[in-house]
Image (tube, rainbow, N blue to C red; front, side, top):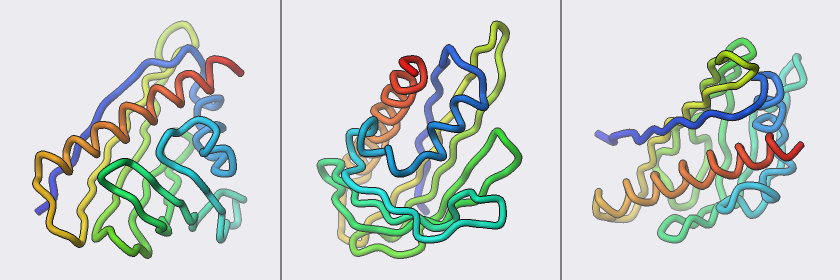
Length: 145
């Protein structure tokens, strides 16, 4: 069974501003180091992305895959793997919690499993790199807006 990795960061912005950046998939290549391309394939009745194709290059993990997104209210989005060449599982979520002073705590959780044999230590390190870079990129993107 795959284990998940998670980390949190505080961003100096309101949750709605943070979620707006998270939901803007077309701009992911501008602020995430690992996502080289992002294309929304379908949207729900609310206009939010339901399926997104991502070209990922995270060092040990390189893949062209499609994720299915579920939006829970205005403060959580989760995803599961729909299609992939290399990955067996890529499940994750962003959870936003408002803090005093108009700040937001963002928790990113990720579970990755690959089809090829890979040491658990290397896989967890890749998960950690993806999470840390994504959170740092998200913080920089939101706070510079």
